[in-house]
Image 1 (spheres, rainbow, N blue to C red):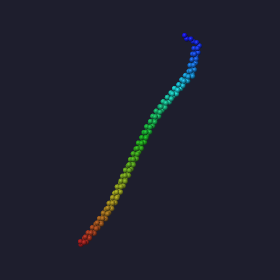
Image 2: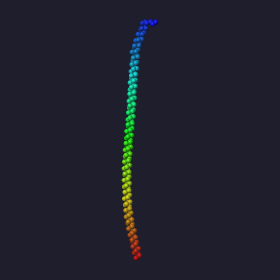
Image 3: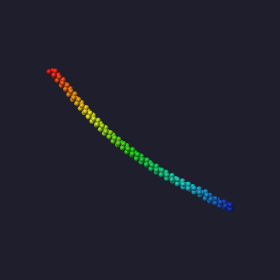
Image 4: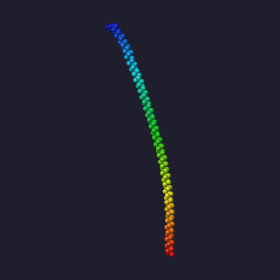
Length: 148
């Protein structure tokens, strides 16, 4: 059978004292540290999740801004192209008008020069005709005078 003597009781008491001291000195601080570590890790996980969510939100916002900037840039380019085309059309119209005006001026100048040249030629023809008629008359008279 089991003999319960003082040694067994002292061993049980010393084991219980040792267990209580071991619990206070080792287990509780280790458990407290593990709980703090777990809380710290959980806080970090939550912070990482919050930062990931903020990163996703900022990325989406950045994409929207990029798209808006691209649309605005395309609108600016389209406006500039339209303005350039309009200006080009205006310049071409002005150049065409200037060319037409220059052509008309050149035609008018040619007509004036032709008219002046024709006037000179007509004057010269009239003078030559007078000279020829005069000479023919003189020759005719000379021939008539020689016949008489």
